[in-house]
Image (cartoon, rainbow, N blue to C red):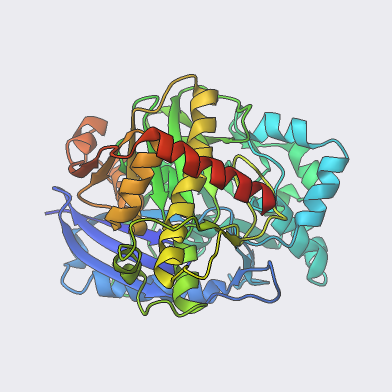
Amino acid sequence: MRHVIAIDQGTTGSTVLVLDEQLQLRGRGYQEYRQIYPQPGWVEHDPEDIWTSVMFALQAALANIDPGSIAAIGITNQRETSVLWDRATGKAVHNAIVWQDRRTADRCGELKANGKEARVKELTGLTIDPYFSGTKVRWMLDHVHGLAARARAGDIAFGTIDCYLLSRLTGRAVHATDVTNASRTLLFDIHQLAWSDELLEVIGVPRAILPEVVASSGIVGTTKGIAGLPDGIPIAGLAGDQQSALFGQACFTPGDAKCTYGTGAFILMNTGDKPVASKSGLLTTVAWKLGTGELRYALEGSAFIAGAAVQWLRDGLNFFASAKEIEALASNVPDSGGVIVVPAFAGLGAPHWRPEARASITGLTRGTTRAHIARATLEGIALQNVDILRAMERDAGRPLTTLKVDGGASSNDLLMQFQCDVLGVEISRPEVVETTALGAAFLAGLGTGVWKDQDAVRKTWREQRRFKPTTDRAKVNEHLARWDVAVAKA
């Protein structure tokens, strides 16, 4: 029996799954790590913390596995989070700047004021926003003494987390990223599938630090010097977490869409082999490129905060001890009692793109309880997604018929039913909700022949539950109107 390792390096923790050829889970490890907040709006990770968490999760996942049975490794990662490291030593020269970080908002504003946004969007499919990697890299080059000169000299390597882990797993033999992660940097031309000299000049990043760009599926390197693993295991799958989830949900047909409920909420729709330019504030991104040459694009809308809002209720307000308790608390009331929570703790993402926006709670009365606020928080997560999906329908020129869901919060039945009701479409939840990791496993398995083709992958996907709309549309529309007012004030 052959096994595939999926490394899912997320924003708050690292998960490692070991799956067999029938997609049965044979091993699992998870480890959280520190979140670093140097000042309001700034979010960092220590790359060594990330590496340590991956190694801890890997050892736990391999506890009952014969290392000689591992056929391939796939990596999926928090996107846009940016690391610079010394090529000679492999040591990071600064903490990783996380995708949630807003420190480059002023720089992004300057680029927009200088008329750069239209051209950047034309080449990258992205808007100019602190979310993406390019301005984070520029900030480090500007603020770490002597770093810019070392970068120009070729002594420094840049990578998103997939690239950083790949370098470490291969004993620094490989400096590469895949097309999905490259497409999130503001430096990559998604039409030519290449780094753009024009964009590098606009953002101010030297070409010498950039990794090679490879397909999402196919052998890109082999393990070297990793405790618990023999040398020579192929690393054959790379994809940013949201593209990986799209693949893991078997969204192989144009029009297929999924929403991953993690720290944020991320919706992607497969648009086929040609990029669809958004007129509604969404992003156009590379969905995957396979070793066979198959190339797929996607429309994407991201809400920066989803599960993180529940963590705030847990850690900031002490509403409950475990995030899973929110469903029971919220179920104590029939509705949110007119309370609206806009969870814009890190600004508003698509389709609004307002980095200055802040979270708010409106509609409070003397009768408001913790249960009302808990329920309104769940509703706020779902209502953000309505804005995104309506924009997606306009851009794609087709109505959404079914939304596949995954991620930790997708196990919350109350949230899923409310999401279904406000969207007015059916929601499909799979048996395995860790589809981000599944996508990495599929890509690695396809790249090494563990699975023959996408049909073999599709057959492994199984639905666990389907939610159908139950609420009167007039009531939904009233709720949406209150939401629109609250968002305008955020």
